[in-house]
Amino acid sequence: MDEQRRRVRGLFDALAETYDQVGVEFFAPIAEGLVSALAPQPGEHALDLGCGRGAALLPIARAVGPTGRALGGDLSPHMVAQCRQLAAAEGLDQVEVRELDAQEPVLPDDGHPADLDLISSSLVVFFLPDPLAALGRWLPLLRPGGRVGISTFAGQDPAWAHVEEVFRPYLTAEMLDARTSGRAGPFASDDGVEELLQRAGYTDVRTTHLHLGVHFTDPEHWYRFSMSVGQRAFWAAVPEGERPAIKDEAQRRLADLAADDGSLHFAQDVRYTLGFRHG
Image 1 (cartoon, rainbow, N blue to C red):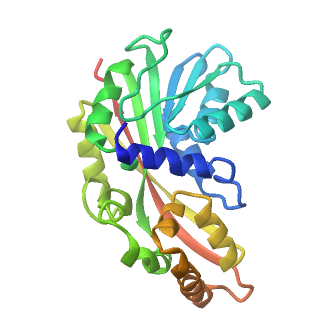
Image 2 (cartoon, rainbow, N blue to C red):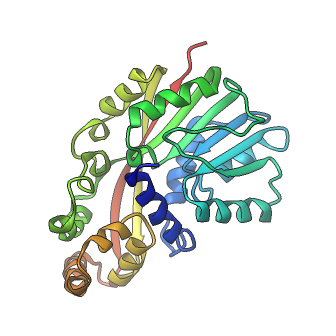
């Protein structure tokens, strides 16, 4: 495993218990939009890569039902453990969760190439060292006519982006990579992401969008959210002694944007890109 994937695994291991658990409707509606776009059917076999705590995997499992199969894979052992517990609590016997590397997924021994009806991956592909190669490796896992769906960030509210600019002087070139910022490169446009899937061999590639409102009760709520998601890596990049000043500056910017009751309201555009394995 290369250094980038080790860092990603360590980050999400640290986030597993609080990820999407601070009262902000963000990852769940994004994942639900992807599931809706993929439209899993009873009896289908599905794979969710980068499953996290199951935001997409569990709705997929409910949709395929007891006659289907839903395999979740994540690089983080702690995320895998959390997802297993949540699936078991719902009694979703059709779910299996394993440690899998989305860059090079190796399915369990009882899995067979070309038997999956769908592959989903929500807010994951831009973390991978080589997204094009990964998408190409997923293709043979689908049966002919099977489909893949990924979600990526599209346009972000300029006000929200202004707050996050406080981190910029501390971030490495890799952390500023346009694949995650969405400002340039393949993840900057619908056409760029669609081209990735087409180059990987998918056909009938298409895109839809979700315009998601994101709400925080106050600036401190935003801070708790930022520490519970991948943005925690930004805080870690700031020298410890400088973090209080950066937090103060971020919260000053947030206070300027707050409603009369102190709440904050931003928008995030989410892109869903689907492709098919030619029959």
